[in-house]
Image (cartoon, rainbow over all chains, first blue to last red; front, side):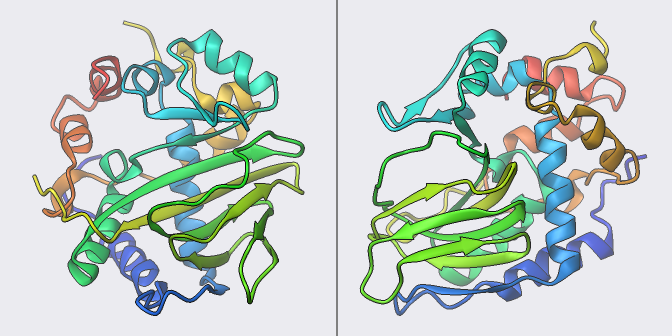
Length: 203
Length: 64
């Protein structure tokens, strides 16, 4: 059934997610816990994206697998993706704001407030997965853990190791060196990325 | 045209296809009426503007 309208309930969830976003202007690392309904709604959307036909995602280079070196691998075939997963590489679905309606609205609300380009990625890994080596992102990231746990090793004066369980979030300003590992059987987290130096490119 | 169940998905490779389907069976997907004007959304718009029976195929097989 399609009525070309977001349901009021789900739109409220998008706004609730937005309400959780901390003010990142001071550059602090902050963390907290999301409302259960918010985490649940976004978890459903995560499973929805994982259930999309894979061929189009691959064709548009929207899925990258994560390894220490080279850090990002974009497979072009189903078998390539399957092999990388079986080898233990975690992966990310990029530009979720262009694929998922609730994430689209969420990123739009943040764009309105922050006046910068906002994108979103979904990260998936499992116990023992490989990922990128310690690195620095050029964007502020609001990370919301949806499934399982994820450990962040931060090289920062005030924070060291940080472990997120389902429903937890952390706001990680750009420029903080970090590496990740997966302590749980499966981990899924959403990363909402604020590109402070880039203006939005609306439709 | 292939059925959705015949398509490869990340959930399939992860071994969570059944669990995912159970979750999605009770949760409808958004439509495009309220997409945000400040966020490029060609892929979502294209998806929803096509026939509901084939939208997934059209959307993803064109790589949008």
